[in-house]
Length: 227
Image 1 (cartoon, rainbow, N blue to C red):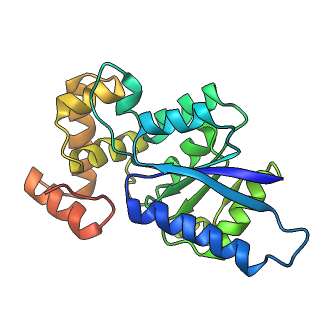
Image 2 (image 1 turned 135 degrees about the horizontal axis):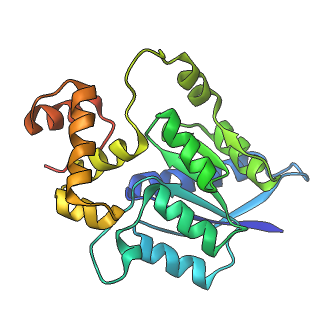
């Protein structure tokens, strides 16, 4: 029986890349009778289109990018991604196995995604072998975090001030071009609280103004900065 997969990420090249890797894994090991069979039923870049795919199909595995193309509308789901979206999906589809595909290596963020219900957390530079391990782990009811990511998390110096998941979310949305008011609406916080998260993040990153912040984010290549 084939395991049915949906891929959701804001970047087309990421979705197509994962799709191609899954196809290559299947063809490279097609002679193995014990090989699990996976099929990709669709891909999308937005939370609303993702919900359509999940509603119309019985999906086993969701590859979920941490960022999707969100927008402000009367439907709050249209503006939801990251950890809040994982929680919503798991509440609606508790048997769905989510593999988070993310560029972020913040250990609190990894922990929060797993606590929200995700079964695996892998980075964008993963290879076919790691992808295969993640797929088979979640299908066997196990959790999976790729080895290189685990090692990088344990190697981090404990003395440094690490950004909190909420501070990362605020910076990520700022880099997407959202205003503080729009961010506050999406994550259900006040403008004052969102501003406080931004200022604390700037203090930890040792930047004094917005220009320095966006320049640092672009240099770090952690977020996709909208110019």
